[in-house]
Image (tube, rainbow over all chains, first blue to last red; front, side, top):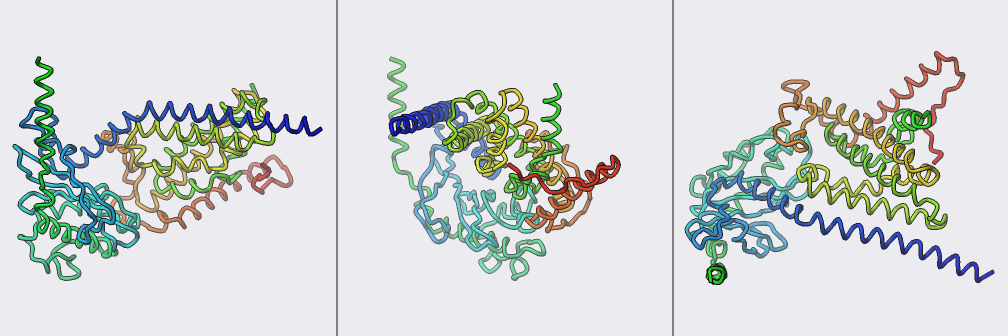
Length: 236
Length: 227
Protein backbone atom coordinates (compact mmCIF):
# COMPACT_ATOMS: atom_id res chain seq x y z
CA UNK A 1 0.00 0.00 0.00
CA UNK A 2 2.63 2.53 1.03
CA UNK A 3 4.79 1.23 -1.78
CA UNK A 4 2.31 2.21 -4.47
CA UNK A 5 1.82 5.52 -2.71
CA UNK A 6 5.53 6.27 -2.77
CA UNK A 7 5.77 5.15 -6.39
CA UNK A 8 2.90 7.44 -7.29
CA UNK A 9 4.48 10.37 -5.49
CA UNK A 10 7.81 9.84 -7.21
CA UNK A 11 6.13 9.57 -10.60
CA UNK A 12 4.19 12.78 -10.02
CA UNK A 13 7.31 14.61 -8.89
CA UNK A 14 9.14 13.28 -11.95
CA UNK A 15 6.47 14.61 -14.28
CA UNK A 16 6.64 18.03 -12.62
CA UNK A 17 10.42 17.98 -12.98
CA UNK A 18 10.22 17.14 -16.68
CA UNK A 19 7.82 20.02 -17.31
CA UNK A 20 10.03 22.38 -15.33
CA UNK A 21 13.11 21.30 -17.28
CA UNK A 22 11.43 21.67 -20.67
CA UNK A 23 10.07 25.08 -19.67
CA UNK A 24 13.46 26.26 -18.43
CA UNK A 25 15.22 25.04 -21.57
CA UNK A 26 12.69 26.84 -23.76
CA UNK A 27 13.09 30.06 -21.80
CA UNK A 28 16.89 29.87 -21.85
CA UNK A 29 16.82 29.35 -25.61
CA UNK A 30 14.42 32.24 -26.34
CA UNK A 31 16.34 34.52 -23.99
CA UNK A 32 19.58 33.76 -25.82
CA UNK A 33 17.99 34.29 -29.25
CA UNK A 34 16.27 37.56 -28.38
CA UNK A 35 19.06 39.10 -26.31
CA UNK A 36 20.93 40.81 -29.15
CA UNK A 37 17.83 42.13 -30.93
CA UNK A 38 16.51 43.49 -27.61
CA UNK A 39 19.81 45.19 -26.81
CA UNK A 40 19.95 46.62 -30.32
CA UNK A 41 16.43 47.96 -30.32
CA UNK A 42 16.92 49.42 -26.84
CA UNK A 43 20.08 51.23 -27.95
CA UNK A 44 18.30 52.36 -31.10
CA UNK A 45 15.35 53.70 -29.14
CA UNK A 46 17.75 55.49 -26.79
CA UNK A 47 19.64 57.09 -29.66
CA UNK A 48 16.39 58.12 -31.33
CA UNK A 49 15.40 59.85 -28.10
CA UNK A 50 18.82 61.49 -27.75
CA UNK A 51 18.63 62.79 -31.30
CA UNK A 52 15.42 64.61 -30.46
CA UNK A 53 17.21 66.75 -27.91
CA UNK A 54 20.72 66.76 -29.38
CA UNK A 55 20.27 66.50 -33.13
CA UNK A 56 23.84 67.06 -34.34
CA UNK A 57 24.88 63.92 -36.23
CA UNK A 58 28.53 64.45 -35.29
CA UNK A 59 27.77 63.24 -31.77
CA UNK A 60 26.64 59.87 -33.05
CA UNK A 61 29.58 59.20 -35.27
CA UNK A 62 30.32 55.56 -34.83
CA UNK A 63 33.54 55.72 -36.80
CA UNK A 64 36.33 53.97 -34.94
CA UNK A 65 38.85 56.31 -36.47
CA UNK A 66 41.08 57.90 -33.84
CA UNK A 67 39.84 61.42 -34.38
CA UNK A 68 36.17 60.58 -34.50
CA UNK A 69 35.39 58.21 -31.68
CA UNK A 70 32.66 60.56 -30.65
CA UNK A 71 29.71 58.29 -30.15
CA UNK A 72 27.53 59.49 -27.29
CA UNK A 73 26.96 56.00 -25.95
CA UNK A 74 30.72 55.50 -25.65
CA UNK A 75 31.30 58.62 -23.57
CA UNK A 76 29.37 57.84 -20.45
CA UNK A 77 30.25 58.67 -16.86
CA UNK A 78 28.42 57.85 -13.69
CA UNK A 79 27.17 60.67 -11.54
CA UNK A 80 26.86 60.09 -7.81
CA UNK A 81 23.56 60.90 -6.07
CA UNK A 82 23.11 64.65 -5.91
CA UNK A 83 20.18 66.63 -4.48
CA UNK A 84 20.27 69.02 -7.45
CA UNK A 85 19.63 66.16 -9.85
CA UNK A 86 17.31 64.36 -7.46
CA UNK A 87 18.88 60.99 -8.12
CA UNK A 88 19.15 58.58 -5.21
CA UNK A 89 21.29 56.08 -7.09
CA UNK A 90 24.15 56.86 -9.49
CA UNK A 91 22.89 57.88 -12.92
CA UNK A 92 24.58 58.07 -16.29
CA UNK A 93 25.62 61.23 -18.05
CA UNK A 94 26.11 61.01 -21.81
CA UNK A 95 28.78 63.39 -23.10
CA UNK A 96 28.74 64.71 -26.67
CA UNK A 97 32.15 65.20 -28.14
CA UNK A 98 33.59 66.81 -31.26
CA UNK A 99 37.32 66.86 -32.04
CA UNK A 100 38.20 65.66 -28.53
CA UNK A 101 36.25 68.49 -27.01
CA UNK A 102 33.09 68.06 -25.01
CA UNK A 103 30.34 70.24 -26.41
CA UNK A 104 27.24 69.04 -24.59
CA UNK A 105 25.96 66.59 -22.04
CA UNK A 106 22.73 64.70 -21.50
CA UNK A 107 21.81 64.51 -17.83
CA UNK A 108 19.08 62.58 -16.10
CA UNK A 109 17.16 64.51 -13.48
CA UNK A 110 14.32 63.39 -11.24
CA UNK A 111 11.58 65.64 -9.86
CA UNK A 112 10.11 64.24 -6.65
CA UNK A 113 7.43 66.89 -6.23
CA UNK A 114 5.11 66.03 -9.11
CA UNK A 115 1.42 65.36 -8.57
CA UNK A 116 1.91 61.61 -8.32
CA UNK A 117 5.25 59.88 -8.20
CA UNK A 118 8.59 60.89 -9.63
CA UNK A 119 9.02 62.61 -12.98
CA UNK A 120 12.15 61.46 -14.79
CA UNK A 121 13.67 63.99 -17.17
CA UNK A 122 16.37 63.84 -19.78
CA UNK A 123 18.06 67.22 -20.20
CA UNK A 124 20.59 68.06 -22.89
CA UNK A 125 22.81 70.99 -21.90
CA UNK A 126 25.40 72.63 -24.14
CA UNK A 127 28.84 73.50 -22.79
CA UNK A 128 27.82 77.17 -22.60
CA UNK A 129 25.05 76.27 -20.14
CA UNK A 130 22.11 76.61 -22.53
CA UNK A 131 19.51 73.90 -22.94
CA UNK A 132 19.46 72.00 -26.20
CA UNK A 133 16.33 70.06 -25.35
CA UNK A 134 14.35 68.33 -22.62
CA UNK A 135 12.24 65.17 -22.67
CA UNK A 136 10.19 63.41 -20.04
CA UNK A 137 11.43 59.84 -19.68
CA UNK A 138 8.82 58.55 -17.27
CA UNK A 139 5.98 60.03 -15.24
CA UNK A 140 2.76 59.02 -13.52
CA UNK A 141 0.90 62.32 -13.82
CA UNK A 142 -2.86 62.27 -14.36
CA UNK A 143 -3.69 61.22 -17.93
CA UNK A 144 -5.35 64.05 -19.84
CA UNK A 145 -4.44 66.61 -17.18
CA UNK A 146 -0.79 66.68 -16.16
CA UNK A 147 0.59 64.59 -19.00
CA UNK A 148 1.07 67.53 -21.38
CA UNK A 149 4.69 67.63 -20.19
CA UNK A 150 5.17 64.58 -22.41
CA UNK A 151 6.10 65.41 -26.01
CA UNK A 152 3.56 62.85 -27.30
CA UNK A 153 0.80 65.01 -25.82
CA UNK A 154 1.94 68.58 -26.43
CA UNK A 155 4.87 70.79 -27.34
CA UNK A 156 4.97 72.31 -23.86
CA UNK A 157 8.39 70.89 -23.05
CA UNK A 158 9.95 72.65 -26.06
CA UNK A 159 9.67 76.08 -24.41
CA UNK A 160 12.82 75.21 -22.48
CA UNK A 161 14.92 74.99 -25.64
CA UNK A 162 17.77 77.53 -25.56
CA UNK A 163 16.91 78.60 -22.01
CA UNK A 164 19.82 79.10 -19.63
CA UNK A 165 20.65 80.50 -16.22
CA UNK A 166 22.37 83.42 -17.97
CA UNK A 167 19.33 84.23 -20.11
CA UNK A 168 16.65 83.88 -17.48
CA UNK A 169 17.24 85.16 -13.93
CA UNK A 170 16.64 82.76 -11.05
CA UNK A 171 13.36 84.34 -9.87
CA UNK A 172 11.94 83.95 -13.40
CA UNK A 173 12.41 80.16 -13.29
CA UNK A 174 8.80 79.58 -12.31
CA UNK A 175 5.47 79.05 -14.00
CA UNK A 176 3.58 82.22 -14.93
CA UNK A 177 1.08 81.69 -12.14
CA UNK A 178 3.90 82.04 -9.61
CA UNK A 179 5.35 85.12 -11.33
CA UNK A 180 7.80 83.33 -13.56
CA UNK A 181 8.02 83.19 -17.32
CA UNK A 182 7.03 79.61 -18.16
CA UNK A 183 3.67 78.61 -19.57
CA UNK A 184 1.42 76.07 -17.91
CA UNK A 185 -2.02 74.71 -18.62
CA UNK A 186 -4.96 75.59 -16.40
CA UNK A 187 -5.97 72.76 -14.11
CA UNK A 188 -2.51 71.31 -13.66
CA UNK A 189 0.14 73.54 -12.13
CA UNK A 190 1.81 71.14 -9.72
CA UNK A 191 3.25 69.09 -12.56
CA UNK A 192 4.86 71.97 -14.57
CA UNK A 193 6.06 73.54 -11.33
CA UNK A 194 7.98 70.36 -10.53
CA UNK A 195 9.41 70.16 -14.06
CA UNK A 196 10.54 73.81 -14.13
CA UNK A 197 12.19 73.39 -10.73
CA UNK A 198 13.93 70.18 -11.75
CA UNK A 199 15.32 71.75 -14.93
CA UNK A 200 16.48 74.84 -13.02
CA UNK A 201 18.28 72.66 -10.48
CA UNK A 202 19.86 70.54 -13.21
CA UNK A 203 21.27 73.72 -14.80
CA UNK A 204 22.65 74.73 -11.41
CA UNK A 205 24.21 71.32 -11.04
CA UNK A 206 25.82 71.67 -14.45
CA UNK A 207 27.26 75.10 -13.63
CA UNK A 208 28.74 73.86 -10.36
CA UNK A 209 30.03 70.55 -11.67
CA UNK A 210 31.28 71.23 -15.17
CA UNK A 211 34.63 69.67 -14.32
CA UNK A 212 32.95 66.53 -13.00
CA UNK A 213 30.62 66.20 -15.96
CA UNK A 214 33.27 66.82 -18.60
CA UNK A 215 36.03 65.04 -16.70
CA UNK A 216 38.22 63.09 -19.08
CA UNK A 217 39.37 60.01 -17.25
CA UNK A 218 42.18 59.46 -19.68
CA UNK A 219 40.65 56.06 -20.15
CA UNK A 220 39.36 57.25 -23.46
CA UNK A 221 42.85 58.04 -24.63
CA UNK A 222 44.13 54.68 -23.47
CA UNK A 223 41.35 53.00 -25.38
CA UNK A 224 42.20 54.94 -28.51
CA UNK A 225 45.85 53.97 -28.20
CA UNK A 226 44.90 50.36 -27.74
CA UNK A 227 42.66 50.47 -30.76
CA UNK A 228 45.45 52.02 -32.81
CA UNK A 229 47.70 49.20 -31.71
CA UNK A 230 45.13 46.65 -32.73
CA UNK A 231 44.80 48.29 -36.10
CA UNK A 232 48.55 48.10 -36.58
CA UNK A 233 48.44 44.43 -35.75
CA UNK A 234 45.76 43.92 -38.34
CA UNK A 235 47.88 45.64 -40.94
CA UNK A 236 50.87 43.45 -40.08
CA UNK B 1 -17.94 20.85 -38.13
CA UNK B 2 -20.55 22.17 -35.76
CA UNK B 3 -18.22 21.80 -32.77
CA UNK B 4 -15.96 24.49 -34.27
CA UNK B 5 -18.95 26.74 -34.81
CA UNK B 6 -20.05 26.21 -31.23
CA UNK B 7 -16.59 27.03 -29.93
CA UNK B 8 -16.50 30.23 -31.97
CA UNK B 9 -19.95 31.39 -30.85
CA UNK B 10 -19.15 30.49 -27.23
CA UNK B 11 -15.94 32.51 -27.24
CA UNK B 12 -17.30 35.56 -29.01
CA UNK B 13 -20.79 35.80 -27.54
CA UNK B 14 -22.37 33.12 -25.33
CA UNK B 15 -19.46 32.69 -22.92
CA UNK B 16 -17.61 35.91 -23.71
CA UNK B 17 -14.87 36.19 -21.07
CA UNK B 18 -15.18 39.95 -20.75
CA UNK B 19 -18.93 40.49 -20.33
CA UNK B 20 -20.32 37.04 -19.43
CA UNK B 21 -17.70 35.06 -17.53
CA UNK B 22 -16.27 38.29 -16.12
CA UNK B 23 -12.83 36.73 -15.99
CA UNK B 24 -9.66 38.70 -16.56
CA UNK B 25 -11.03 41.99 -15.30
CA UNK B 26 -7.62 43.28 -14.23
CA UNK B 27 -6.41 44.08 -17.79
CA UNK B 28 -9.96 44.84 -18.95
CA UNK B 29 -10.18 47.72 -16.51
CA UNK B 30 -6.54 48.85 -16.42
CA UNK B 31 -5.45 48.87 -20.06
CA UNK B 32 -8.51 50.14 -21.88
CA UNK B 33 -7.68 53.85 -21.81
CA UNK B 34 -7.47 53.83 -25.61
CA UNK B 35 -8.78 51.52 -28.31
CA UNK B 36 -5.28 50.67 -29.52
CA UNK B 37 -4.11 49.66 -26.03
CA UNK B 38 -7.15 47.46 -25.52
CA UNK B 39 -6.91 45.76 -28.91
CA UNK B 40 -3.16 45.14 -28.64
CA UNK B 41 -3.36 43.54 -25.21
CA UNK B 42 -6.42 41.57 -26.26
CA UNK B 43 -4.59 40.12 -29.26
CA UNK B 44 -1.53 39.30 -27.12
CA UNK B 45 -3.83 37.50 -24.67
CA UNK B 46 -5.52 35.60 -27.51
CA UNK B 47 -2.11 34.51 -28.72
CA UNK B 48 -1.12 33.28 -25.26
CA UNK B 49 -4.43 31.46 -24.83
CA UNK B 50 -4.18 29.71 -28.19
CA UNK B 51 -0.57 28.73 -27.47
CA UNK B 52 -1.20 27.52 -23.92
CA UNK B 53 -4.32 25.56 -24.90
CA UNK B 54 -2.42 24.15 -27.84
CA UNK B 55 0.54 23.02 -25.75
CA UNK B 56 -1.43 21.58 -22.82
CA UNK B 57 -3.93 19.62 -24.92
CA UNK B 58 -1.48 17.17 -26.58
CA UNK B 59 0.15 16.27 -23.24
CA UNK B 60 -3.04 16.31 -21.17
CA UNK B 61 -2.88 12.54 -20.57
CA UNK B 62 0.59 12.78 -19.03
CA UNK B 63 -0.34 15.38 -16.47
CA UNK B 64 -1.34 13.80 -13.13
CA UNK B 65 -4.49 15.30 -11.70
CA UNK B 66 -2.79 16.37 -8.45
CA UNK B 67 -0.25 18.65 -10.07
CA UNK B 68 -2.22 19.89 -13.04
CA UNK B 69 -2.55 23.47 -11.80
CA UNK B 70 1.21 24.01 -11.16
CA UNK B 71 1.98 22.44 -14.55
CA UNK B 72 -0.59 24.67 -16.29
CA UNK B 73 0.79 27.76 -14.62
CA UNK B 74 4.33 26.74 -15.54
CA UNK B 75 3.34 26.33 -19.19
CA UNK B 76 1.43 29.62 -19.27
CA UNK B 77 4.21 31.56 -17.52
CA UNK B 78 6.84 30.16 -19.90
CA UNK B 79 4.74 31.05 -22.96
CA UNK B 80 4.02 34.56 -21.72
CA UNK B 81 7.72 35.14 -21.11
CA UNK B 82 8.52 33.88 -24.61
CA UNK B 83 5.94 36.23 -26.13
CA UNK B 84 7.14 39.10 -23.92
CA UNK B 85 10.73 38.62 -25.07
CA UNK B 86 9.70 38.24 -28.71
CA UNK B 87 7.63 41.42 -28.72
CA UNK B 88 10.47 43.25 -27.01
CA UNK B 89 12.93 42.02 -29.64
CA UNK B 90 10.88 42.41 -32.80
CA UNK B 91 8.26 45.08 -32.03
CA UNK B 92 10.05 47.29 -29.56
CA UNK B 93 7.72 50.35 -29.73
CA UNK B 94 4.72 48.12 -29.01
CA UNK B 95 6.57 46.67 -26.05
CA UNK B 96 7.01 50.17 -24.68
CA UNK B 97 3.24 50.65 -24.67
CA UNK B 98 2.21 47.22 -23.41
CA UNK B 99 5.40 46.36 -21.52
CA UNK B 100 4.04 46.33 -18.02
CA UNK B 101 0.81 44.57 -18.98
CA UNK B 102 2.21 41.59 -20.86
CA UNK B 103 3.62 39.83 -17.77
CA UNK B 104 0.19 40.38 -16.21
CA UNK B 105 -1.31 37.97 -18.75
CA UNK B 106 0.08 35.20 -16.52
CA UNK B 107 -2.20 36.15 -13.67
CA UNK B 108 -5.19 36.66 -15.97
CA UNK B 109 -7.43 33.86 -14.72
CA UNK B 110 -9.17 33.47 -18.09
CA UNK B 111 -6.05 31.80 -19.48
CA UNK B 112 -5.88 29.23 -16.68
CA UNK B 113 -9.66 28.81 -16.79
CA UNK B 114 -9.67 27.78 -20.45
CA UNK B 115 -6.69 25.45 -20.04
CA UNK B 116 -8.33 23.80 -17.05
CA UNK B 117 -11.88 23.56 -18.40
CA UNK B 118 -11.25 22.99 -22.09
CA UNK B 119 -7.72 22.08 -23.15
CA UNK B 120 -7.33 19.49 -20.38
CA UNK B 121 -10.34 17.59 -21.75
CA UNK B 122 -10.25 18.13 -25.52
CA UNK B 123 -8.15 17.43 -28.61
CA UNK B 124 -5.48 19.95 -29.71
CA UNK B 125 -7.24 21.57 -32.69
CA UNK B 126 -10.50 22.45 -30.91
CA UNK B 127 -8.42 23.56 -27.92
CA UNK B 128 -6.36 25.99 -29.96
CA UNK B 129 -9.51 27.36 -31.55
CA UNK B 130 -11.18 27.69 -28.15
CA UNK B 131 -8.23 29.59 -26.72
CA UNK B 132 -8.07 31.88 -29.71
CA UNK B 133 -11.81 32.55 -29.86
CA UNK B 134 -12.04 33.22 -26.12
CA UNK B 135 -9.11 35.60 -26.55
CA UNK B 136 -10.81 37.25 -29.49
CA UNK B 137 -13.98 37.63 -27.45
CA UNK B 138 -11.93 39.38 -24.78
CA UNK B 139 -10.23 41.49 -27.47
CA UNK B 140 -13.65 42.59 -28.69
CA UNK B 141 -14.64 43.78 -25.22
CA UNK B 142 -11.25 45.43 -24.61
CA UNK B 143 -11.42 47.20 -27.99
CA UNK B 144 -14.99 48.41 -27.51
CA UNK B 145 -14.36 49.59 -23.97
CA UNK B 146 -11.14 51.28 -25.06
CA UNK B 147 -12.90 53.02 -27.94
CA UNK B 148 -15.73 54.20 -25.69
CA UNK B 149 -13.37 55.57 -23.06
CA UNK B 150 -11.14 57.19 -25.66
CA UNK B 151 -13.94 58.93 -27.56
CA UNK B 152 -15.62 60.19 -24.39
CA UNK B 153 -12.41 60.94 -22.52
CA UNK B 154 -10.22 62.39 -25.23
CA UNK B 155 -12.42 62.91 -28.27
CA UNK B 156 -10.14 60.83 -30.48
CA UNK B 157 -10.00 57.27 -31.77
CA UNK B 158 -7.00 55.00 -32.44
CA UNK B 159 -4.49 57.42 -30.91
CA UNK B 160 -1.18 55.65 -30.36
CA UNK B 161 -1.56 53.67 -33.57
CA UNK B 162 1.81 55.07 -34.66
CA UNK B 163 3.44 53.35 -31.68
CA UNK B 164 2.31 50.00 -33.07
CA UNK B 165 2.73 50.46 -36.82
CA UNK B 166 5.34 53.20 -37.05
CA UNK B 167 5.00 56.94 -37.66
CA UNK B 168 3.19 56.42 -40.99
CA UNK B 169 0.11 55.21 -39.13
CA UNK B 170 -0.38 58.59 -37.50
CA UNK B 171 -2.71 59.66 -40.31
CA UNK B 172 -5.23 57.03 -39.24
CA UNK B 173 -5.74 58.64 -35.86
CA UNK B 174 -9.27 59.99 -35.95
CA UNK B 175 -10.40 63.14 -34.22
CA UNK B 176 -14.01 62.38 -33.44
CA UNK B 177 -14.80 65.57 -31.54
CA UNK B 178 -12.64 68.55 -32.59
CA UNK B 179 -11.56 71.06 -29.92
CA UNK B 180 -12.64 68.64 -27.22
CA UNK B 181 -11.32 69.39 -23.78
CA UNK B 182 -11.65 65.87 -22.52
CA UNK B 183 -13.81 64.20 -19.94
CA UNK B 184 -11.31 62.96 -17.40
CA UNK B 185 -13.65 60.53 -15.63
CA UNK B 186 -13.80 58.28 -18.68
CA UNK B 187 -10.01 57.90 -18.78
CA UNK B 188 -9.63 57.30 -15.04
CA UNK B 189 -10.52 53.96 -13.40
CA UNK B 190 -14.19 54.84 -12.67
CA UNK B 191 -14.72 55.22 -16.41
CA UNK B 192 -13.58 51.63 -16.86
CA UNK B 193 -16.12 50.30 -14.35
CA UNK B 194 -18.96 52.40 -15.78
CA UNK B 195 -18.07 51.45 -19.35
CA UNK B 196 -17.89 47.75 -18.55
CA UNK B 197 -21.22 47.99 -16.75
CA UNK B 198 -22.79 49.55 -19.83
CA UNK B 199 -21.35 46.82 -22.08
CA UNK B 200 -22.65 44.02 -19.81
CA UNK B 201 -26.07 45.68 -19.66
CA UNK B 202 -26.12 46.05 -23.45
CA UNK B 203 -25.32 42.38 -23.95
CA UNK B 204 -28.00 41.31 -21.46
CA UNK B 205 -30.53 43.59 -23.11
CA UNK B 206 -29.87 42.01 -26.51
CA UNK B 207 -30.19 38.54 -25.00
CA UNK B 208 -33.49 39.39 -23.31
CA UNK B 209 -34.92 40.77 -26.53
CA UNK B 210 -33.83 37.67 -28.38
CA UNK B 211 -35.39 35.47 -25.71
CA UNK B 212 -38.63 37.43 -25.76
CA UNK B 213 -38.91 36.95 -29.52
CA UNK B 214 -38.47 33.19 -29.30
CA UNK B 215 -40.74 33.05 -26.24
CA UNK B 216 -38.31 31.39 -23.92
CA UNK B 217 -39.75 32.15 -20.46
CA UNK B 218 -36.72 32.95 -18.29
CA UNK B 219 -33.52 34.03 -19.99
CA UNK B 220 -30.33 33.23 -18.21
CA UNK B 221 -29.14 36.52 -16.83
CA UNK B 222 -26.60 35.38 -14.32
CA UNK B 223 -23.03 35.36 -15.60
CA UNK B 224 -21.89 31.78 -15.94
CA UNK B 225 -19.34 31.41 -13.19
CA UNK B 226 -19.46 27.66 -13.17
CA UNK B 227 -15.79 27.24 -14.03
